[in-house]
Length: 438
Image (tube, rainbow, N blue to C red; front, side, top):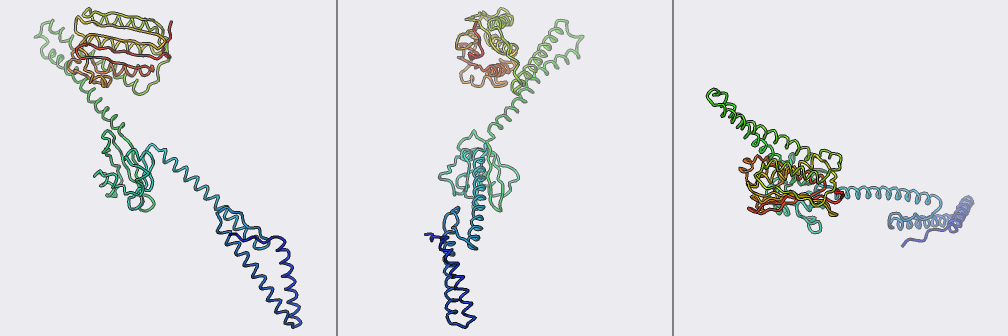
């Protein structure tokens, strides 16, 4: 309990009394009176009482929470209390600033896209952020103060933790999620304390695998026609005079076809590269949807050369907002695929429908069809259901990947329905914002 501080009245009485006692004591000493000694004793007792009271005030105040106002005392003790109070106030301000900085630091660490775990010297978890919980399937509510090797039991991680050589990060797969690959790096700080940083590199790993497959596929696709062209030319150079003119024309025609195939492959690679690297979309044009579909229909008839029955269905016209060049490429790709994979005598339907729900362009055929198991991967670069048949028909394996990117750039959706041996239906759906009705 805080002692009640001295009031100004008490101090106003005590100070004159002490002064009178001191003067009387000096006078008594001068006259040799015994009363002087008594006065001196009384004066010292009064001063001791005042000192004791002020000390009790100081002790009681020191036991109160930081920030409690200092007792109001006059004189030298008042200066002491004021100075101590100012010092406490400065320390409170510094503590509040440090607490605020620590709070901001923790908020930043909690929001980091990488996992962060602080370890004690015995490898027990002191703190972790939510991303570390996801990466290692941990729970802050029950796993704090638990040694990390007891929770992450993968041998490569335990060996990395014990090796004390953290110059290179560790790449490891999650035991519970095999599709997740983590890059783990340990950092030593503050003596023997360590921090575990983790990053999910699953997507980067998938992209690297795609890059390697892409390079391998491009090399393979270019090597085949180059081998054919080189073989024909070498044959003609070695025995030009020995071949009839008709054979020479046949060889040169086949070489020209392979050259055209390589040129088409390179053009489609450049188109796909521009689409995948986020090249700026062309300025939206007002594209006459019916005219564009009719153009794709005529191209299909020319490509079919009478081998198929090609029909056109138009249910409404309207205008498409987008790139005429990209949309024509996508429409033509779907139509040419139908020609390639529909046997002679089959039927191909090309159609367009526009209403308040948006627009849809579709190509339906009764060709060889596709096993539904392959449909999710059809838009991958160079993915082919039947690699041998694709080469026979002149496909590059890039057409549907290009279509998918073009549809996405126009806020649309590519839908595929197919059954093996029964034909396929490829449709591009466009949202109402991309379609203006007549």
